[in-house]
Length: 185
Image (cartoon, rainbow, N blue to C red; front, side):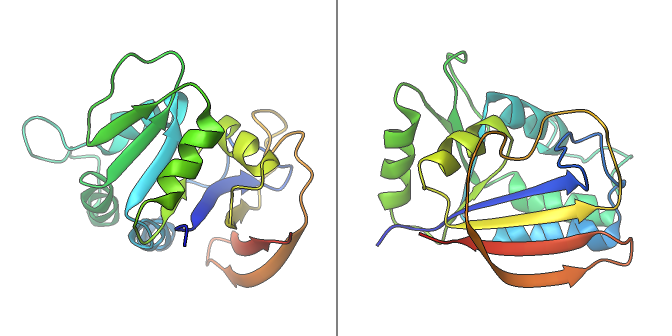
């Protein structure tokens, strides 16, 4: 049986997915995202998301986390840093940070990753998830919807037609809501 591919992302009310849009992270949201990471043992990103995450959450060479990180951010980084990462990219020649590179037919490569033993694959980003959703490869969608109108930026699953079944919903003190869905065949 294939391990589940779970897409999770922050999104604004108008469907924008820029990491700069939405509410700033707080202890509650960081705890939620840390628990989301713990549901999987593999992270799947495209180049842009991989580079963004590596720049923010990879343990520095000194071994010490930066002073700007609070306890909730350090906990998130401590979970993410050692996890297996799979990076889909046609432009990168190599990756590190516990990562392997996939290129060529990304859909087939992701099918192979899903077929490997594991607790699940956590998918992030914007472009790669849209391509995988269009092929019916995503099993679960989690959106943290922020009470913000961004007005511009990359759009959630642009051009993809999906039918989703709600399975869970909760609200953060900040006013953001977590909405979890399953694909409907």
